[in-house]
Image (cartoon, rainbow, N blue to C red; front, top):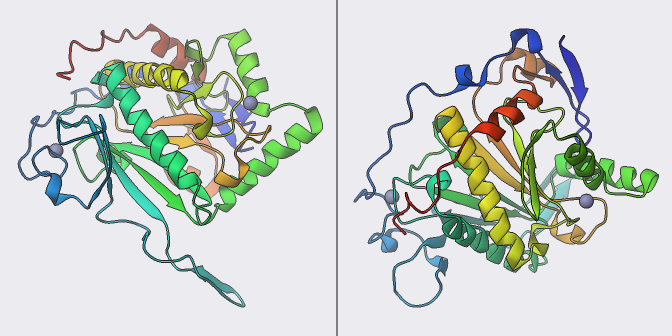
Length: 341
Ligand SMILES: [Zn+2]
Ligand SMILES: [Zn+2]
């Protein structure tokens, strides 16, 4: 029977359409995407072309001019500009702010042909350390209201550059979507005296049906009202509103969890296009008791069509319980054997 389910946080309704249920294999890419060469001379992110990117902000391992694993540079085609001030103007119905902000590119590996799922855990930990270092630094800037870290993998996820990279955009405002969701979370905390995410995580861990994997510090699960097939969330098991509060030990554990989940998607669904985003509290709300940061991974297996555009409701043809069971059973090969680093 089809079922309508409501997301506890966004309050959006989703139709879980079991009648049209697709088996995971039907959604998988039939022929794995052709991997490019390890080095592309014209690619600005490949080693040797460091002078073709805007100035470097950070590199790991830190230090001299030795080989790098991860580089952070300013985005050449930045959506927002760091050298201007966020001056506001308001005139009746028209409000605007000069486009101040920071737009970084995190180059995840020198190897053009790599995918995150096939890097080592230690390498992914360096990518996460680069995220956190930039996140921590930018959170201290009083002009920054909200920082979004995200990755687009594949054409359907909006990638324009093949070389593995993620991005960070620090904006001077908080979107009304984020404000609205925080309002819901705050109200829940006022009414029940607990974080709605902590509550959900403990219920899901007790029930197990939608759990993909757990580690000492993190849990990966398919949301109960998952809007799209194989949408997967990774939550820290202890309460934390901000990604910036993640400890060094937790970063290592998150790297293992993220790589493994991406590995399950890569091997189980034939390297699907995907986006992931870190959903963390705005800088001014670090430490609040009512919000819990998480990583949201959205494989791009289906397209948004007329019904979704018209109603704001999604139809998901893979019940999250089936998606979780499928992913639990996908074996990911041992990391390290594949990476040359
Ligand atoms: Zn490259
Ligand atoms: Zn919590």
